[in-house]
Length: 78
Image (cartoon, rainbow, N blue to C red; front, side):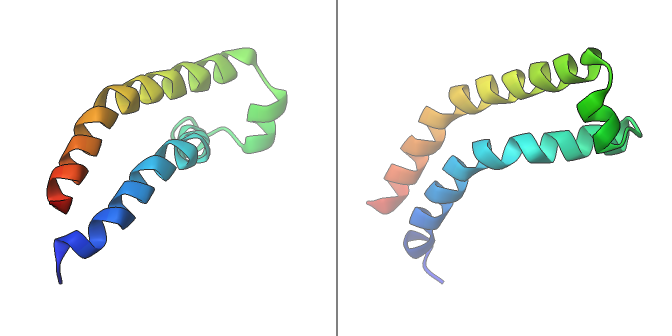
């Protein structure tokens, strides 16, 4: 199993992570806080602000790590 063969797949998964993060974040938040999705959708804005803030933090972490991950993936292709 050659790692170079899998590097393009890792690159695509890394980019898709940011898209999949929001539904996973909403699902995790609703499970941890014991809030149903309908309550989350119709309910208090505090839940929505918290989810937005968590997603924003996640985007900032991804944005900070992205150049490092891309460099690592390019280095592995040589």
